[in-house]
Length: 331
Ligand SMILES: Cc1cc2nc3c(=O)[nH]c(=O)nc-3n(C[C@H](O)[C@H](O)[C@H](O)COP(=O)(O)O)c2cc1C
Image (cartoon, protein in one colour):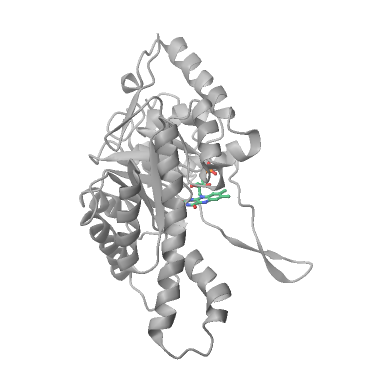
């Protein structure tokens, strides 16, 4: 009998399949359906401070035109934030009352002070944990890597100070010394890191000569980047790693667990196949475990990570200098 129970951020999940932050986790109805599909946990769609600011500019700002007083603007700014937070908190509240699924809230704010105030509100609403969706594009020429990293540390410290629920940090790959930075994040007091967020990238239409959005969904081979970094880091840091990007079937779930991930987050595949695809992925994971005679995930988690593989240098190799085909014996 296979047992898929998984500890992540100190929470007990019935399995390691999480539905990642996206439009799939916005309403209580969606969350109930994901619970029926046997999902281990969900990360709610992020609440974006920028989105709230945008709403302020496009609706309320018109109403307050002509009013010189900053207090007047501040009042409406505050009101929109409150209303949006209230709506978000209400989803958490309903999900916690009507389902047993662990709910991880997600925030994406711009100004350091807002991260804390948003986090407090979501903890009060009953969220089991908080994912900080922090992705800063290091595009300013005058900004150094230390300055950018400091922003992440300020955000983490600011949130840690005010809430008690466990925190995971979801990051991208834009760090000049990724291993060192992940290690420093792991020592701040957070409980997990999600590798990696997948950002929107602009594309160019060569017929119309204009910028266009690129594909918002990942493709199957994108799992290789998080796979390498989870394998490189999972044996070297003490907090949980959650894999995100390019997990399209049970095969990638198994690979991420072998690399040492505690959980795996799925988004694009569910947009493609619907919420009950989770069950199919779980069936595949169970069948593979039975075939290999594993009864718990801990029996095989991390077998392909940096500290366990026969040849760790294989994980470090980045040039195609040699033919890789004969390397079948690395685990
Ligand atoms: C439509 C859509 C909306 C998303 N919204 C969020 C979000 O609000 N917050 C967040 O942290 N990630 C968001 N993501 C990123 C996903 O959580 C995930 O990290 C990314 O899609 C890679 O996983 P995948 O390959 O399984 O799609 C979104 C992705 C998609 C496709």
